[in-house]
Length: 403
Figure 1: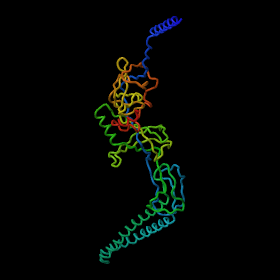
Figure 2: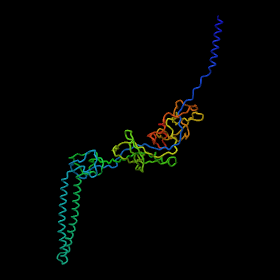
Figure 3: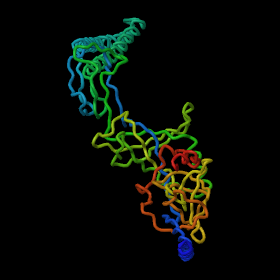
Figure 4: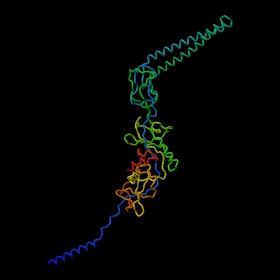
């Protein structure tokens, strides 16, 4: 009985061993799938974003040119005024009296000139027959000339009195939008006072003053001198408003300062923008995007395909021979939309891996395919942002963005 059981166990063990041998090794897993982009050369605009302030095209502070008490205010605060419009009236009674006094002095001078001239003419005839002395004639002639001079002086006094009376009506020196009035009717104002009565600003067009570091300008000029970067349409400027929206109208670059600010090391650029709706207010903080140049034959790599190793160096995974993964160290300059301008390490025709990079190692065989996400530059024109404001020397800024 026991012998039969032992024989049965041996037969079962043999059957199991034969079954295991027939099954063999488990199949190998398939190669991982990755998204690949074939790189090519493109022209990339160098668009820099700089901080700036809105400045009115014309600004005039309304000040009194005579002393007196304000009688009336003739404008609406915050409204539009035109050049020559009366804004304030100053009590003019003292100035009317001064004008009348000057006019009386002119009339007296005109009356005196006739009598002195007639006396000088008579003495001229009498001195010929020795009826009067030569000295008396000279005195009469001098009195006549003095009377003529008095007329000229009194005319000037009348004109000065008329000007002062005209200053009792304070007029707008320029057309534009006027702010709040700092003085009310009944207030005493004086010529040459420190405080303006109000301020008028012309804002149908405005200036935007932006600052750019001298180092950026030098980097750009050196890169143009070496070649590969052409001068772009630097006259076109776009504004980013404080709420993040884009101002709908483009501006034009007017000029840049010829000297560098000794305290900040920056150069001021001024652009002009149309402002028909009054959206841009003087003093407003904005960011200006301006085209500095254009990189010819640039390699633009999607940002998701560039990473950093443990030493902080920029690296990229590319598809090599037989679909094996290769790692390359690269150098990036600045961002253009959602891509990096690569200056070293990649060339046209390289197949950059942009998807499936998790746990991917060099030498791994992969299955390439098209990426699922769009990798075209956003916005078309591209931008550098604050992190890439180092011009051609902004590699350090690009490090933080590539992580």
